[in-house]
Structures are given as structure tokens and as C-alpha cells.
Length: 330
Image (spheres, rainbow, N blue to C red):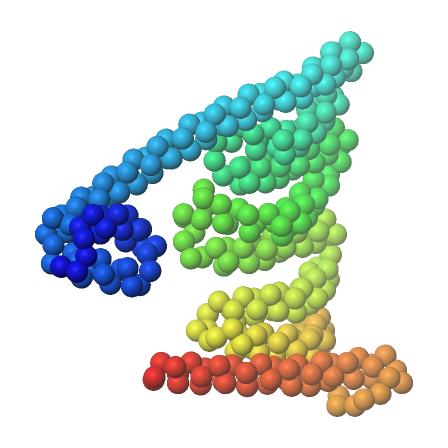
């Protein structure tokens, strides 16, 4: 053996931690292949390191669990204290309401209004898990409840019109949060994006239906459908082109740009076809003499520009796909 066992024993910790130089590693491995005692020492040191790492990981997990429980208790206490503070103005309003002989009228409006800050402050502190999900759902429910109470005590009949509009507005920022939360995502699987887009469409349709019923005119539904179809077609086209094809990102970008240009170009065609069953295709002319000419000019400019830009992205996608296949062949 070329090397002394004591010297190899001193180098073994560096060898096990993989921090020694290539020359030292080669020398150690050569010595271990010839020296059973040093080889056994190396195995024992590896086994000892594994046990130590397991003990450290166990202690780390125990510390994290204790800290999580500590912060949950503190959050629950803070939530309870803030909830008690919120209860003070509610109690005061109840006493004043009863003392003035007004009964329980506007007290319920104050009570419903206090649910809104509670959903944004107390719920995140009290919820043990999925705080964002419980916050947005409780906020939505409290806002709808406030609208209902205000409508009831004002003697109005606008709740069924306002509530769907509020739901549609809140669904735009909140549905991605709800769909990706632990509570909901485990049931949706790979259909989160479809659920979000479907919710947008459903709440929008519900809003337009409620407005149409209150408007009381069949003509409203035809106008609403005519002007709603182009943006709905655009939204679903973007979703389907991004979600379904197994293309690379450049091809998807090209298809989305082209689809957007086509929807813009045929926007008036779709509207007029639904509204009064009239066919209309923008004429190929570049003039701004009248509003109709300017509209046709803009439609053709967007379509031509969209085709050119999408063609550039498609060409880049072809180049990328070709280079990828060449790498695979190598």
C-alpha cells in the first residue's frame, strides 16, 4: 500500500462529504480497495453520518411542528381578541337600536357589515389551513349577505340583480385562488383552468340573465347575446389553444395571436348576425373618410398584422422544433 492508514483515516471525512480533491479521492479509493480495515472504517463512518442526518432531520421536523403549533395558537388568540373587539360596536348598535325604539332594523345592516372586516382579518387568523380560500369565500358570502340585508330593510327589489353582478366581479380575481386551494384542487384534479373559465362564463350569463329579467324586454337578451359572444369566443379560444394542443410555446403563441386577430376581424360580423341576422364582412379598403371605412381599415390592419406576427412565431416554433429533434438524434 502506498499510503499510511492514519493519513487515509484523516482524509476519510473529506472523502465521505465529497469535498476532497480528485487526486485525494483517487488515492483514498485505491487504498480502500487494498485495505479492509480502512474500508470498514469508511463504511462505519458513512453509517454514522446517516444516523446523525436522520436524527438532525427528526429534530428539525419536531421544532417546525412545535413552532407551527405555537403560531397557530397565537393566531387563534389574536383572532379571538379582534373578533371580540368587532363585537363591541355590534353590541353598542344593538343597545342604541333597542333604546331608541327602532327595534332590530338597521342593527342587522351593521351586523352584516361587520362580517366583511371579520372575513378579511379574523378568518385568516382563525383558519388552521387554506387561509386564502376561507378568506375569499367568507368575504364573498358576507358581501352578498350585506346586499341582501340592505335590500330587505330598504324595501327594494334589486338584490337578484345586484348579487349576480357582484358574484361575477368577485369571481374574476377570486376563482383562481379558490380553484388552486387545497380544499378544492384535490377534487378538480387537472381541471382547474376549465373550472375557472367555466365559472367566469356561468356567472356572466347569470348576471346578464338577471339584468334582462329586471329590464323586462326580450330585445335586451338578443342585444346582450350579440355583444357578449365575441369576448366569450375569444376567452374560450385562448383557453382551448393554450390547454389542448401539445405544441411548443411558440406555436401556441402564434395560434393565440391569429385567433385574437380573427375574432377582432369578425367581431361586427358575429354581432350583426345575432342581432338582426345580417351578414357583414369588412371590405378591403384603407380609408378613414367615414366611420364604416375606418372600422373596415382597422379590422384589416389587425388581421394582416396578426397573420404576420403569428407567422413569425410559427417560424420560430418550427426552428425550435427542428433543433430539438437534432439534439434528440445526437
